[in-house]
Image 1 (cartoon, rainbow, N blue to C red):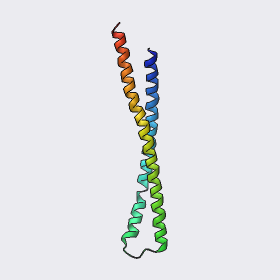
Image 2: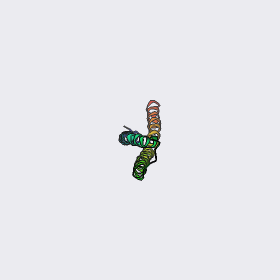
Image 3: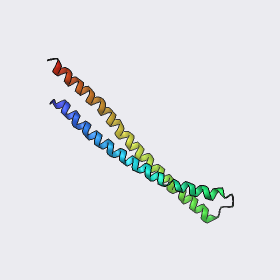
Image 4: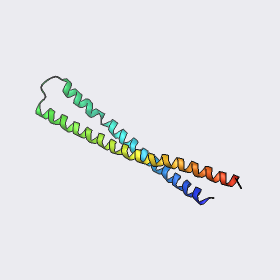
Length: 110
């Protein structure tokens, strides 16, 4: 087996594994955020009563809103990480295709 091709295959295998793990992390982050949607319902319930909001309720809204925003930030971080790994994976797909084509062409040209 060609050393160049062997290296590309190994890189491709590693990139696939890394990409799968990062995407699993992203799915976990999305599922975690989905579980927090109840926070928004809670805020909506308090706000929709159209009564004066008491200080205790306002504190609850502010804390809930902050917790939800933290989860959104964690999702953004995971999306950034996912995009970064995905870009390397896509680059590697092109690289292995070119290396494979080159090697096949070399062998067939002999």
